[in-house]
Length: 308
Image (cartoon, rainbow, N blue to C red; front, side, top):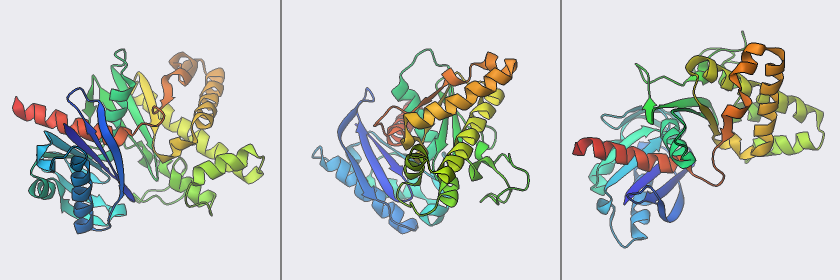
């Protein structure tokens, strides 16, 4: 069995998969601590509880994969700049191996989720895929021929930090008008405040009820998500783009609206029409935890490579 841990800003999801990558046992969701020590302790607790379902200890897992926000050195397991977790620098891989007694591989959470989405789609016709994560921020990860493509410095897919509105809102990266500032959960929360638990769902509900302000904010969100899709298609020309992350919880209304924008652009541009953008976009499979599944796959890939 292999364990996947998806460490987020508020919770850790734990999933156990078998040798055929099928989820077994019960998915666990536990709170994430704040600060390096608390993050490690929370991850250890999640691993121990996952193992307990099977009457074993964590060292019985063939591998443990971890997806976590921030900059990740996949060779050493070091995590840097995971600001939402209160982590500046953390040797997460070695710390977890010390506590759990099993091989641990650490990967950026969006990249891990991309692997999970690619696996769960189970479409052998897909040679390439982009996973567009619409969470508090915005980022993408690329799968080419079944493998993650990180780029020369690990920044492939960081389209959230492409400026699209000159002189726009200051982004966390230090630039202004980045795509993330207009197409993310934080963008919705800034423009549609007062709904901290689920601002995107509240926005879509209010827009459906005819609230003029909600309609305007929703329109800006949808238009700029479509901008992100156009950027991905015109730069890496992937077969498919899968939308995930917290914003994707809006479900079919979001997908329908985004496809509507892409169809409108196609009607105005024969060049874009030829790219058939609307049919290349989909949502993550409903009810799936692509990030935790992807983390388990990260562990498997690493352990397989070491065995060779």
